[in-house]
Image (cartoon, rainbow, N blue to C red):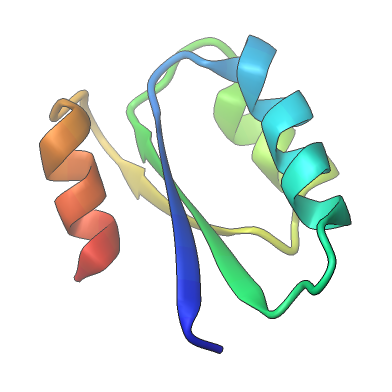
Length: 75
């Protein structure tokens, strides 16, 4: 696997489901999907746990902003 798709999220539940559903249908599927959640309070984390357990997640306790979240995913 050479590619990781990093998705920073902050209260983006409305968009997260459709985004992940589309990504997981892609062929070939030899990539990793990583969601870095920035302390969402809109149910995003519950959505990830319930509907997308195969997606890797990093849960941050607070909103660190876009660039720090992506950097965390790159680590």
